Image 1: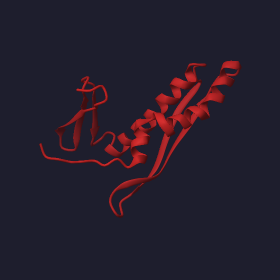
Image 2: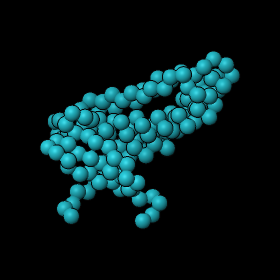
Image 3: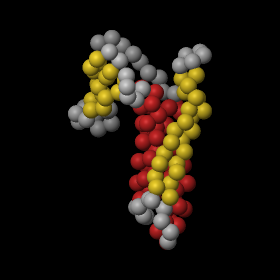
Image 4: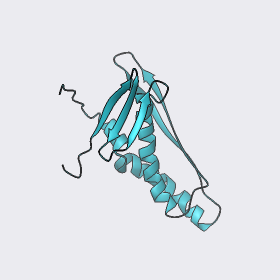
Length: 135
């Protein structure tokens, strides 16, 4: 298998409950009583962007606050989908030179994540085709 290939499996554990497992064996439960698949998609988007931005800014200084929020409108007419997706960063750095540098880097890091680095946002914006097949 190539270094670029990604794969995971979803197993039904009970009615409306599922377990995702990646190739490394890491598991995530979702479904009834937990996060929905749409919320997982939103979390993936926020998480991907957060990692990119955190790596770029925390090289300078540790943030005092680092929160990423995703808002979207779920439309059902014409097929379920999300629109008006907005990713909002709420980040604060300490006073001083390192904090000033991190604040300067922040907008550029967000732009690089959006424009090139975040696989999740790039895939969503490219409207990547999905094939469903029966094993």
